[in-house]
Amino acid sequence: MATINDNYLKLKAGYLFPEIARRVNAFAQANPEAKLIKLGIGDVTEPLPEACCTAMLKAVEEMGDRTTFKGYGPEQGYNWLREKIAAHDFQARGCEIEAAEIFISDGSKCDTGNILDIFGNNNVIAVTDPVYPVYVDTNVMAGNTGAAKDAGEYEGLVYLPITAENNFTAEIPSQKVDLIYLCFPNNPTGATASKAHLQAWVDYAKANGSIIFFDAAYEAFISDSTLPHSIYEIEGARDCAIEFRSFSKNAGFTGTRCALTVVPKTLKAKAADGSDVEIWKLWNRRQSTKFNGVSYIVQRGAEAVYSEQGQAQVKGLISFYLENAKIIREQLTAAGLSVYGGVNGPYVWVKTPSGLSSWDFFDKLLQNCNVVGTPGSGFGAAGEGYFRISAFNSRENVEKAMKRIMEKFKV
Ligand SMILES: *Cc1c(COP(=O)(O)O)cnc(C)c1O
Figure (cartoon, helix red, strand yellow):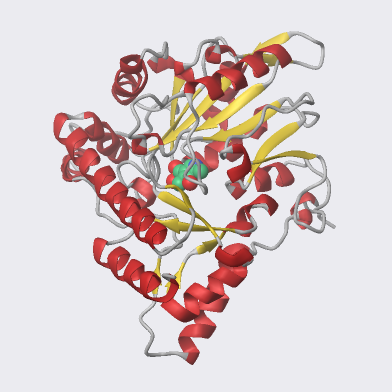
């Protein structure tokens, strides 16, 4: 009889979003006249930049013409796209990253999970709490954890709490960890990391032979010019960090699919025999074996992000969402709530009032205001007592939702 990967049985049933859907559906059935506004989603709502659409339409025509048709492209991505990324996103910010160190993919979600393919099963792994659940669940699937404990944490993972008490920046662990997931600007808290904070992580990683997985999916939302956009702005990061980036949140590619992973050629880790192995070579081998590249059409769309028009249109999208976030912050503050994030990221992280649990606040917002958000406890035990509100929505919905909250909560 065939057997399964038993690690999948350790996974807690996807609890958060199904439970939200269950409560929302029950409420909608009991209150069919209620006009619900959903501010819980981590997905963009605005259409693609025009420059990207124009480029993709042209690419479709090329594919339909015998003289310009393209079959399989390079697994690592077309060089013309990787050169633009290297120049605009890295070299322009003083990072020594070359096109050859960039791997184009169809998403950061898969890359942050797939990266575990090339690392051993004996690494000590640290994640922040709260956390983007993909980092945790992919480690469970890979067999890097034990069973789930009562509070939902897995045996064998090191959890680094990020709360208001430590200004939402994970403290450098006192113990030795080998792989560390960091996400800044952060999902779900909207917090950012200063250069000094990232320098402390890089110094720690270099001293301990650790590797940092840096998820910069929200870097385009950084509005404070002192904050680093890339981990490679930090001295020494080429020797200890892999960076994940995506076109999902800056250019609205969540349904179009294009992302990139940077693996510096100077990054090394140990083989079982004690020798140093270049991580770039392993990732290149992994990708060229298990991945056949992103479609030519989509890569042309991503390339258009770097055109003059594309840059202006992406800036417009980001400003639109950040203005939503500002409205959310201001209105919730005026209603007497403590809010964090939402300045350099699209998420506002709210402290639940009067000691309500995350789920109690969820129910209260749903019932009193007909507004749906995301309970912080769904992202980890340290998210209890917090609530995530997303700025990804229309202006009209954001304004309506905030008006309802003001009316019900203002003291
Ligand atoms: C949205 C998001 C991504 C992007 O994922 P894609 O697969 O590229 O769409 C990556 N990391 C985090 C934390 C995100 O919220």
